[in-house]
Image (cartoon, rainbow, N blue to C red; front, side, top):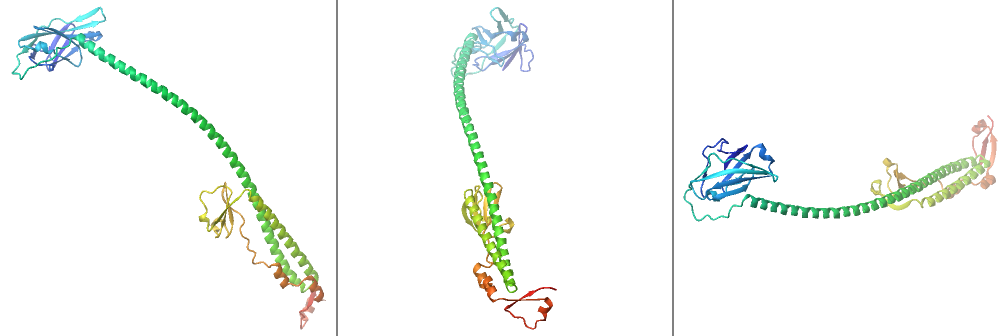
Length: 374
């Protein structure tokens, strides 16, 4: 590697320490291995083209300038003891030319050592040929870039068309999704309304069943009181029988109301079957699904046999099985208590005070004692 600099119009060889070399040397028979790095002063940076010219006894050769280094033509290194002059020539447009002065001390080409074999090589291209080669390479690269740009533009157009189609499809899908969402909201509102109506009717049904239970309890109590009063007064027995009839009528009406409510509720509720426990209920029910829970679950307010329905607010307990085994049936009442007619035919009523009643040594079981006065 050799170094030099151009200051103004002077070409100055440098040594490896970048200092002026007063006796620059080259070695003969080196081919494409001797590189010369030349730094130019500021005025040369305005040149459109710069060539480095090597002159020896065999002729002169020009090489296009490269700041990273130019290869010394092997033609000027063919023989030893051959001085080599280097000059730099630059052009600004077609009217200005810069050229360095002749070197004060040319490069000395030293004789080379022994060689092995022939050393044929191609002729070093001059600066014009190099410029043409570089221009052709640049043109080829430009054409390649243009072809690539055209291909990318075509791809971009295709991508844009695809994107437009996708956008149109997405818009259509979004519109369909909006319509579906609106339909879903409408259906959900209708389902909620139906569920609310059914829930209200079920509440009425539960109220009717409670009234029936209370009426049955009142009827049983009234029947018991009637039986006790029958031993004291036939009039009280008649009132008890009337109360029993009223209770039965109320229970029948409550049963009819409950049946009507259940018929209406069936239009909104969907019986889905029976599960053993609350934990066995499905995890993803639909609104209106009704299940019968066999086992009681006090934690969730469920009695054994209760029906529960899935609403927008979760599981809602409906009425289940009502246990009336503790209450007397009509047949049991008839076998246990006397009727009004039998009381009227067989009863004997005696009016007396409490003191008189207490003073009786024997009390007749077939006699009704009516306590009056103090």
